[in-house]
Amino acid sequence: MTKIIAISGSLRVRSFNTAMLKAAQQLFPENIVMGSIEEIPLYNEDVEAEQGIPPAVDTLKNLIADANGLMIATPEYNNSMPGVLKNATDWLTRPPSDMARVFHDKPVAVMGATPGGFGTVLAQNSLLPLLRTLKTRPWFEGRLMVSRAHTLVDDEGRISDEEALKRLEHFVSGFISFCAD
Image 1: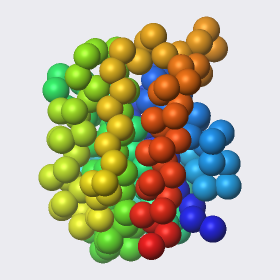
Image 2 (image 1 turned 180 degrees about the horizontal axis):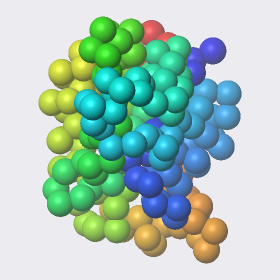
Image 3 (image 1 turned 180 degrees about the vertical axis):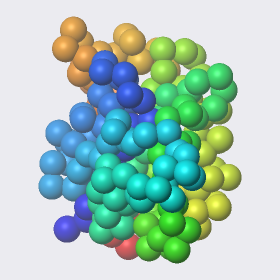
C-alpha cells in the first residue's frame, strides 16, 4: 500500500491548508498519514550541538523516510512559503548525513490554499529550489492551488465545497499513482 506523509505549512488551528490535508486523509484513509511541524523549534546550530535533534524532528524524519511520498500544503506569506515550513526543512536536513535517507528521490507533491486570488502559486514556486536541493522527485503532473479558501469551508473549518473536494480527490489520486510507480 502506498503511504503518503502530509504536512501543512501552517500552524494556525483553522488553517485552510490543514483542512485540505484532513479532507485528503478522509478521502484516502489507507494512504494519507498526517505529519506535523508544530512542535519543531526554531533551528539553532548551538541547540543541535548541545541537545541533539529534537524528538519532534526525529519523528517527522522517520515518517518521511518510511513513506512512499510527501505531500506539502502551504499557505503563502509575503509571496513565499511560511518561515515555519522552511525552518522545519532546515531541521529535517540535520545532520546532513540524514538528508539522503529522508529526502533523496522522495516523490513530493505541493498544493496550497489561500483566501487570496492567486492560489499560493508563489509559495509553491518558492519550494522548488528547496526540493531540488534536497534531491526529491517533485510531481509536476498535478498542481493544486486553491483561491478564496475562506469561502470553501464550513463553520467547523472543514472543506465543504464539492468542486474543491473533487479537485483535491483528483490531485491526491494522481499523486498516489505517481508514488506507486
